[in-house]
Amino acid sequence: MTDTPLPLADIHVLDLTHARAGPTAVRQLADWGADVIKIEVPPEPGSDNDGVGGSRLAPDYLNLHRNKRSLTLDLKNPDGHGIFLELVVKADVVVENFRAEVKHRLGVDYDSLKAHNPGLIYGSISGFGQDGPYSDRAGVDQIAQGMGGLMSITGLPGQGPVRVGIPIADLTAGMYLAQGILLALIERGRTGEGQWVHTSLLEAMISMLDFQAARWLIDQDVAGQAGNDHPTGIPMGVFPCSDGAINIAAPGGRLWERLLDHIGAPELAEDERFATAGARSKNRELLNAKIGAITATRSSAEWVEELNAVGVPCGPINSIDQTFADPQVEHLGIAWPMQHPERGNLRIVGQPVHLEGAERPQSARLPTPGAGQHSDEILDALGYDADAVADLRSRRVI
Image 1 (spheres, rainbow, N blue to C red):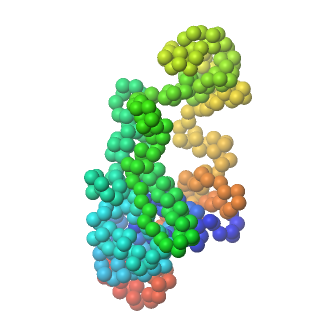
Image 2: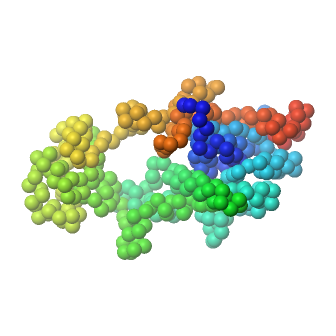
Image 3: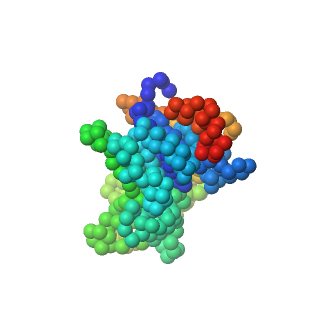
């Protein structure tokens, strides 16, 4: 990595977020160079619970909160709130995911902060939106997966609702908010004015339905569970091998022909039950069984190599350890190194975007911080001397 500044190196962010969706948004900014100060509640004296809901040394927390500095600050205390406002004056972005009544009670809502910094970009994530009949409800990823329709189309046909194996509503809401913040920063460059940017778990979840939602909105076609089969492309799904299973995608045209030629079943193309897309859809289960009987005779590695060689998309179904051992994954550098003072040399999940004309981070700049690890240096930059900092600490303001 060179000394060239990262794209967001001049952006200063105050992070009031907790849980996952908000921190995911902030992580996007932090990884690309923003100076992020994570505002945390001062821990109770003698307590080993610093309010994060789990260990700061656990993989999830270490991965989620890298590249930040930490300042403990009691926002309910007038002095703590005053320090926060000093930081707001110098900030470009504030990100939060409080419920509406909480941020207003703490005096950290957009209107309150805008009065101190008209150029401030204020990013918010809620469960269901900033207003409307559900706006006062707490948002949780699995609730959003269910309400947003995803669980109705996930899993095997007839299985009943199934959650996705990752917190997809949290993650996508966080990425959408980061995108909105970047748009607002561009807009501020034109107007000089900041603005409130917000999204919700529910909106993000519905957006991710994409074509499944469009099927309903345009044709009133309600999608159901399709299991490992693609909802509309056939054949496309999971097929057995002698040592496990693979994914094959040959939904028509030349791909369909190449697949049949290579597996030695060209006669299926002439079979009236499979000759057209409509016929393949009607007889999908039978077609999958015929293809599967052939693929089951050889190993996954053989099929992956040979089908890709003739232009038919095919891939293994990896466990997570196998994913990170894959040579292409290693080549892409998606696993970043991070040196942590307690956990030592670690690897974390890096950024998947490559900017050919700008510096791209290749490791964590800062390890995940301890609670209040940077309080002294942050307050020093604001002009607080050692005696003032000690007084704030003795009164548990920091």
